[in-house]
Length: 113
Length: 112
Image (cartoon, rainbow over all chains, first blue to last red; front, side):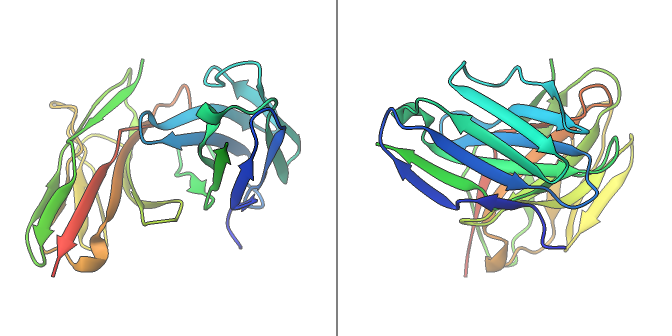
């Protein structure tokens, strides 16, 4: 298996623009997570899905952020409009089962200028 | 709520030195505990895990024991290598929330 695949690996955008990050989980995994990593706040859980349904979105910073999982093999995280403070590395992770390890993608480094 | 506390870094060691990275946690019930490692420019990789009290997780010479009485999961390695230089994250997953809660990470630098 190719692992969790995220795209793009790097994104540079101007403040106010819409940004869409993409994730393809490992085939057969039924849970998907979006995390954000910054120097100041470390790794923060933004949202997670179980069987394509959002279970906990309490970590989503504000209404500018939205996430979807239209099917078991694809998820998006959208920021509209983007702001410089959104600059971070965004990780997607997936897992199968209740209490098992999560597998992480290589992340998308977002820079908003 | 759940939380994980790790020792501040960076930790700088010479090759073949003994490593300890402290990790304590706060959680309801009996969470599963994990150590993840992040190499520069990469995502997180699972290093080891333990799912119940007194379990010892081990991998690549690293070990950690789930200590319920002290709510700790300290990472140890008897002899570090330059290739072990990375950021190490302690994490927990409780049976209710089923999402990982991470510590702040500890950067390890191993010098030849």
